[in-house]
Image (tube, rainbow, N blue to C red; front, side, top):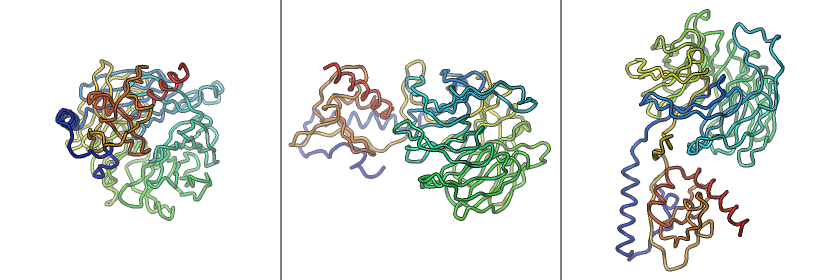
Length: 450
């Protein structure tokens, strides 16, 4: 972020005191020293275990298990990585070789989108989401969440600011994969047994178009560098390529023998190379979308890989392998499976992000945000949110008045927050959204108690 007016506090006045200048330099140095890419964490939904499992891929071990509810499947991270959203369902587990007519009826009390605090490693709440949520996508502005309701053939919109269901729209049968356009105006959802993608206007929740696909479309990916989208067609062993400008199917990319290859999850760093998991074929495919062909196959990555995530630099691919209860770590340049990490249960979805907090109390700074600076107070008085009390102190339920010489302005909301020390600000910047949410709750409690 080059615009320091949105990344730092109010600009410093000339003639800063030597002591405070030293504090500023120490603060900037501390943040710079920790601004290198943080260790990565994987967040895995365990469908049968009812957990979100946090995995350290470098140490190849489970960091934590967070109980969230029944049948966690689709999983995503908030833009600031402070929360994990996970789809929960009271519908019984079906799938291959299961006679669904003999399954018990669904229990809708357990349907919803769970919200997990990453730093606290606990479930905060569950939002209503419509019946049987399977997967979902977040708007890029972080305000809305769009959910596929498999049992009822609907797409639901959840307002994350209020935590309420804004509305639903009927789409095709058995909707699954969801994606949101870069401008947040359009939502795409694959419908398995309708063999199509429904295109929905986000603001009105009206269906704009229906794009035909191959048999049983599952996951969906929208390219970041051109007007192309891709859907994995499980029973056609292909990718449907469609135009996101005029909502038309363009072509199909064959991925192998339809009797063997079952494309499921899809991911990419920039859209120039696509990576596809293949279910019972137990392989990861690397696809060149421009050439329209598979350019590499990584075999034996795990049993029925479905969920797929990429590291930020694209050097690693991570797959969730349900029947084998593990997560695979694949080195993309060499095409080698580096590890298969046992997580137990039935891993379904997976996302990757910089680590923010570990179970042993270590803290790591997310590699995000701009340039943060400590400043000296100008001649006029400064007043911050929470009556200028330190947000870190408030998270512990303590009022610590600050003079605002060290401060931070929220780049999104424009609100000023004051800190009592450089150390307090450094800690705060590890997970600003999470700390602010907890500080607000404590501030309300303190205000209520007088």
